Length: 550
Image (cartoon, rainbow, N blue to C red; front, side, top):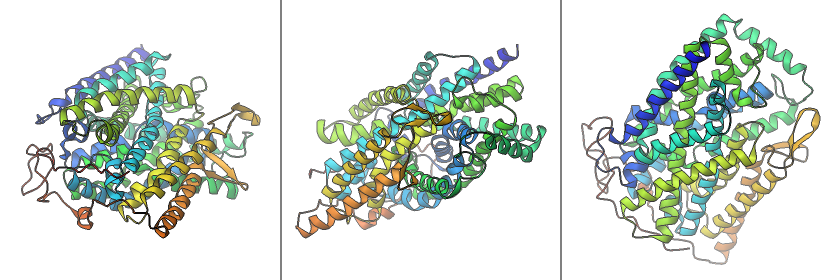
């Protein structure tokens, strides 16, 4: 009967969330959900609270609540790299996403590829950035789907078909409602998350506290044959790997297309700044969830089969009352659905604006753009399923780190491009190609090492490589190669007087705010009408120039 109560609670809450997501298309009666401005970025009209919940829902996801605790459960201290990298992203986000919001607000950009195309005068560069973003997003979505599969498995829904159910649920919500679905679901998710945090703290206090958890976890790692796990990092080599993971992840997290999508949906610069400043609150929750991996070790929680993603769901299943466990598992499930939805929307927008409209249909109508993005988002979800089936990593975190290797290669064009247009467009394309090639080849050559040093899988076994005896995150190594080519190529091309692309942005674009006279105002703001002259953002649209240089 206990299992029945847990399952009924879980299924009931997940069903309610599905209905909420499907009905989100009518939330505050958007003027025209059949345009990319409405479907893809919510009309660029989300206020402080909506942006806060959406940002937390998309950036602090099943990766936070399932994958990170599974990593600390499996290897110990190395899993805590997620906490400093999440903290570092706060000042980076405050500076860079504010500039990104302003220039996108001024020109009507929806994706990073559009910005890079305009900044460096190259449709080819914009398309390359878009394709890299799509490729990087698929394994990140796969992290969410793998976590959802682990939750369903804990509830008793085993096999491959629950994964297909998860994909179907995401597809139904996003296809109809666009970004409004995850925005509305994020509010419900954070309510459930509040319960999960309070319940977790109570359970830890009732079972010996954190001191006992750390002592037992330390004894566990001391008895394992692996030299790389433990409560502390293993010497200077372990510290080097840890530091490179922190730096690489911090640089990559806010250049993912979905991160920019959540910020572009904000109604003004101050909304972006307030939410960036408040991000450390979520970092506290991330730290707590990471420590729960040690608590699971102290309570002798055993994952189902070899799937370490089931550690957190199994912990709540074993120690919590059935009704409370059902609520927690529903929160984990929703935390997987929301970011997967936002990521698929962002990847679809990237294809529509930087490839479909730029090359195939320059005169595409807003309704046509929205239709293409809807169907592309389904293809992206299917690609994420193949990532799970083909890569089959030891830790689902590795899927995100593989995506990070790819998205890091857009740093010179997208991230640094927000500060300067010094790089030559052709050098940026060459650097991107070299960085991607270096990263993929290195990932392919890394085997997955099992207990006792045996090779479990020949390829794509980890995202950590060894160079001259020092373990490093592959993404950092590939980015170094990328930047080297971009810098040297720019110097050579400038010396040869090869004409650079024309920058279609201006310095004041990066400080534009909601009262910018160059854009129009959306009448029905989701968080209430403003008191003054604000807002953009929808049609009649600012006429965006398609960059024609290649």
